[in-house]
Image (cartoon, rainbow, N blue to C red; front, side):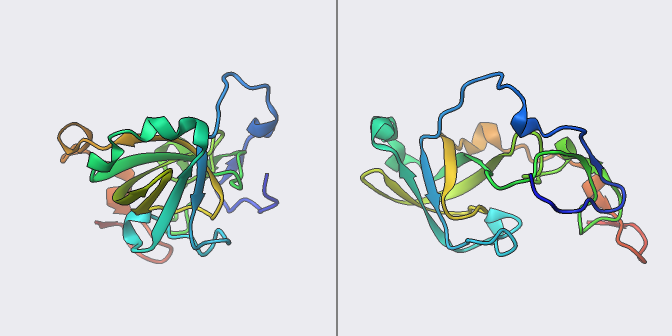
Length: 175
């Protein structure tokens, strides 16, 4: 758990979820290689980054890559291993209001699982070259799934609080 002091409006759990007995088994199937070694240097959203990253699959899982070269885009699920896990309510720097962690895309949550849709650029053995990640170099990989535009994209999906951001000293504005 990070020693970061909560911002005004944030609420920390009275325990560290990372120290609770596990409910399920989880295995990492590889590592993600990125240009970022400091969390402040990571992009806030991988889709905003043009940096090329590598996903390295561990040898026992190599056969799971069969046919992946036919995919243009993938879901990548990864474990944000350096994220704080005890903040249940957060005050994002871009919004003066507080929100529950489950209403945010932050890696700061009881289980720091992150998800990105990436562009698959190349497959070379057990290494995938991709664009669209937002994690530290060495981040543990949980899973990869194909992205199906027809079933995975919902054009009219909304996050109501995000459409009415407020910033200190400014009126609420629709985005």
